Length: 110
Image 1 (cartoon, rainbow, N blue to C red):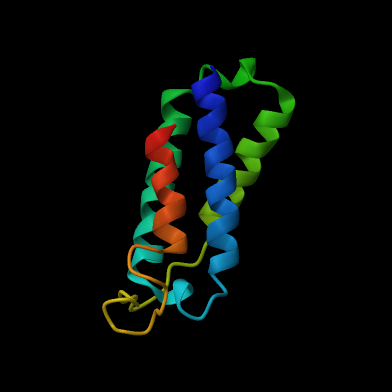
Image 2: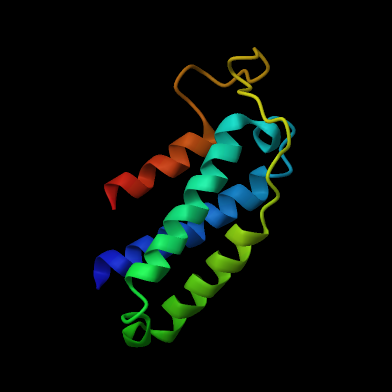
């Protein structure tokens, strides 16, 4: 149960990151951003499908996080013509640093 709760907390977190970074002039049009939206939608849908029978056992505040995450993730705009901003030489973050990829990587540790 705690793993499921942590996964829900992660999706709520990443929904916030993606929503905020949508307005960023580089992240919001980056291929990493577009790929992460797709991966988070797929992962969230799979989580929902695989644990549908468990949601009734979750605390109400966790269910609220789940619902907020769903709304936010599904409402994200997919950038058209997304291109890797680092590869294009536009993103000046240090090598190996990406707001989107770093946030997404947390899921593999949960």
